[in-house]
Every structure is written in structure tokens, then in C-alpha cells.
Length: 124
Image 1: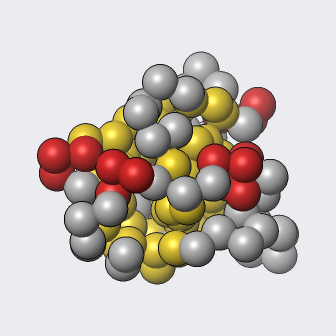
Image 2: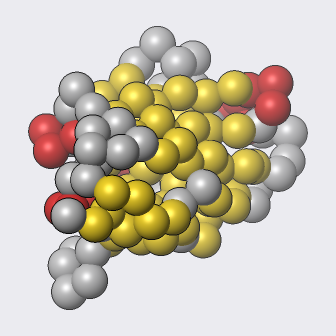
């Protein structure tokens, strides 16, 4: 499985962006998916995950109520709708996939598939 994240850019505080993660291969629907981000000088942090069925969703506290994760298995695509963006949301955002939801939930250690990141910059 190859993942490619895109949709980042420069936006003013309070604005919105939608990130997409396109996946190759025919196993997309069998994978739990997640978003992570890494700001300059900081460690990678978990943002959100969605289970294989789409019925299990969880967000990190800093983004809860502002970000929405979703998946379109027919399009092999994962999304992250980001609203009410803040300067502290500035980071490179990565999508990830694994058969084990717990690997995504526990910070991404050992996750099988990572996409190349997309830069999100929020100006104040």
C-alpha cells in the first residue's frame, strides 16, 4: 500500500483546509487509518484515527471539535477536514495505515504504511 497526502497550504487563523490521503492497492478497506503531525522541533503527534469500518473515530484533545476524519473506501481515500485552524496547528501532516488500530492509537510506532507529508501553515 502506498499513501500520498495532499491538500496542505497556507491559511489564516480561523480558516479551513481539507487534507486528503490517496491510497494505492486493494486492501484499503481492511486498514485502520490515522493522521499525525509534526511541528518544527517537536516530536510527531497523533491527530486522529478511524477504524476499518469507519465506526470507530477518535481525536487528540487539541483538535477535538475542530477536525473531522472520514474515509471513502470506494475512492481509497482518507480525509481530514480542519476547521477553526490555529497557528499551533502548523505542522507537516502525515497519513498512516495499519491492520492494527492499536498501533495508530499508540502513537504510530510500528505502523506499516506512512504517506509523505503535506505542509499546513496557519498564520496569525
